[in-house]
Length: 77
Image (cartoon, rainbow, N blue to C red):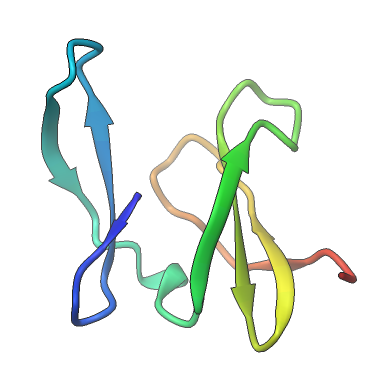
């Protein structure tokens, strides 16, 4: 994931050789995220989910495999 200076968030897939492909996005659901914290398969569907801060809360953006981050899920932290 990368963010432009204007705040738009994009995915950039790696080729496995140190180079990257084209930008995929932007992901409008991440516009309110104040910082992407990390990722990993939290939902158990073998797809990387994203953690971010939004409004001072840690939220999860679940990856449903559609390149649409969807609504944030409040983690309670």
